Structure formats: C-alpha cells, structure tokens
Image (cartoon, rainbow, N blue to C red; front, side, top):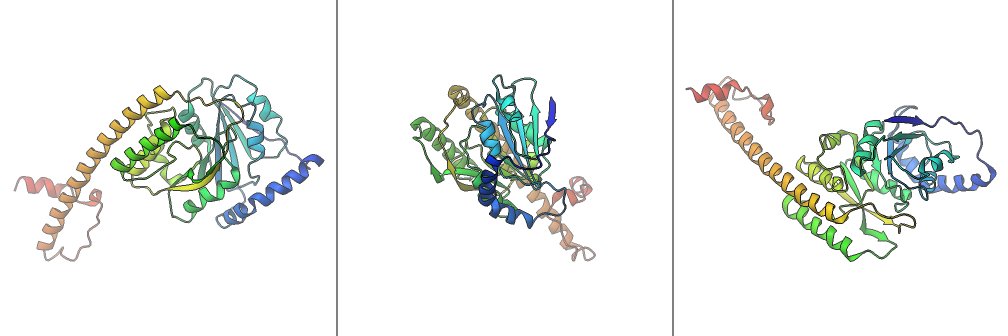
Length: 321
C-alpha cells in the first residue's frame, strides 16, 4: 500500500477559481463556525472525510473540489486499484487541500477501502462519502452536528428523510425496506436508508470496525448491527441525493442478498449470546449485592455495576461453601 500526500502549496487561486472558492466558503461558513468551537490546537484535525474510489475518473475531481477547504478538515482518497484515469484526475486538482491519497495494490472492495481510510484518518469525527458525485458536501454539518453535540455516536444520511433527484428503482426500495424491517424487528433500530454510504461517526466507536466479516456492500449494514449491539446511539439525518451521471454501480445484487442473509444470521446469534451473558452477569451482581448487605462492615459499600470490578473469588468460595 502506497501513501501519497499532497504537498503542493498554491500562493493564490487562479483567476477563474477565485469566485468558485468564495462561493464554496460561503456554502461551508456555518460548518466552519460550528467546528471552530471544538478546535483545541492549530494542528488538530477535527474531521476526516474518506472517499473510497474505484474507476471514477469522470467525477472524482469535481467531488474533491466541492469539499470544504480548511486545515482542520482532511480528505483521504482510497484508490481501490482503479484501472482508468482516476488518479490522473486527482493530480489535476488545483485547490490547496489537506489531501492524502492511499493506493491499494489489489482491488479489495468497498468495505476494505473504508477500513484503509479509517486507519489513515486523524480526525475526531470521521465521515465517509461516495466518490460518484451523488452526495452533497453541504450536508456535512447535518451529519456531524449530532455527534459533536453528543446526540448520536453514528449518523447515517437518509434520502427518505431528505430528498432525492432521480427515479429510485423499485428493487432498490424493496431491498432497503426488507433490511429496514429486519433491523427494526431483531435489533430495535429503524434505519430506512440503510445502504447509504454518506455517514459520520465518533472516533470513540472505532471498535465496531475491528474484525469485520463483510468487506463488500453488506459492510454498511454490518456496521449498523455492530453499533446497535454495542449500544451506541444511531441517528438518521436528512440529506440530498443526486442521480449518478457517470459510470454505474458496482453492486452485484445476488451476492449482496446472500451476504445479507448470512450477515443477519451471524449477528442475531451474536446478539442472543451477548444477551444471555449480560443476564448472567446481572444475576451474579444481584447475588453479590445481597451478600454484601448482610455484612455490617460492607453494607455501606457502593457497588460498581460493572461485573469486572467484582471479586471473582467470591463466586468460587460460594460454590464450595
């Protein structure tokens, strides 16, 4: 894996770019003002934006140039072994961005590209966006605000809460509706646009990305299930979604369907096991509390609800007495 970091300094914007930059600064001024409240140092990266890229030569340059341009926002492009001119288009970018390009030597899939981006991200909050131009960077504040205000740990952009400017295929809606109901019934979360790649999450929940099982497009749903099992707060946020003007989706529906069934079975079993363990721990805790109250010396002791702080020898002694 090769890492290329842009270090080209631009003293002034070209004449034909100055109006564009001014317009973009106005578009993101609310975002900049909000993030400055969380800036602790000049070198701090507050937000990392990850763009997984595979053969997006027609869109990647425009997508990157449409992103906010501040030193506390970094952009990480993960090139998943593109075979077209995507990298050449990035080299033509004139903006002085805090930009990093990471190259996969082999095509590894969407999920692996996201994981590579996370490993290279420095931001307190990490955002993932698609590189096909369907997402609007002006929705960034909508996604990151709930995380900074502690309203959510993980946010997901939703075209159903916002709007979309294209004809949505019936198969896509039915597929998302099916997944939505499964998540709601078995994991207690209602996530309508569950396959959307425009997401944000707090660095503190990165353990949900450890030892992932699915590196394709089932990756998106896997993270929802893992965040749900771990008890993190998930929030869907309204965004705008535009039609893909170039290229085509790389999703193979039959493979995705098989992975989805396998995914739900795996994590449902995991949830059941975890529920049993938690109930067992709670039962042990109640026994321990009851015994402590019988002791005059320990009756005023404050009990920590985390079982890991309980003297394990107590249960061994109880078994043999």
